[in-house]
Length: 217
Image 1 (spheres, rainbow, N blue to C red):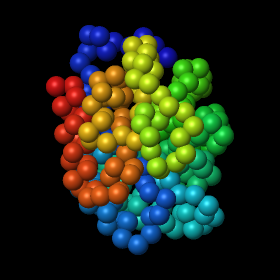
Image 2: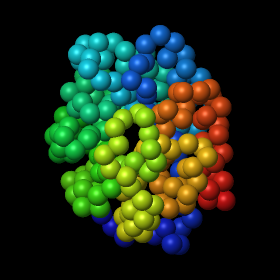
Image 3: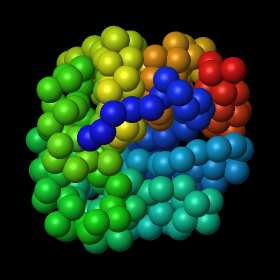
Image 4: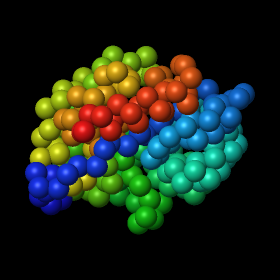
């Protein structure tokens, strides 16, 4: 990791990183298409639970194709094996989902490997040293997407942005209304799930992009 030059180079606006709801059946592919057509989205994370790999792959494939058509990175949550099976663009690892080294060996040098670091500076530095492509901090706000065991403050984003070039991702309860300060503090990517899928997904994507650009105006 190298010294950051953010103090002399204007930062790019944060990018939107969508996380799927747990249920991606029914009309969800159409909703994903609508969301990705509405505005800039950098990545989509396929996050399902308690499904065997065959069923997960069946559900993932049409979503992966939609992401490819929109030039959006398709990231698999938790499972290195599923990411390899799908030929996904990358994998997002929790602290108990395998190591960056294992993911790199399985998925190759070009795979995007992210690591959940909660609110821990130590875990983030460790992930960076091990070759992660991004680190994820959170939760920043209460969320119903998953049980919140760790809350992160804006200071961890400010600290990371001041020292390291590896992108950092903010996750947890983020909405168009509250993401501005998180962007200003240093988040390179804003993760969103409920704020998009619990309402009109196209309107939410537009609102997030507007808010993120305004934060650094």
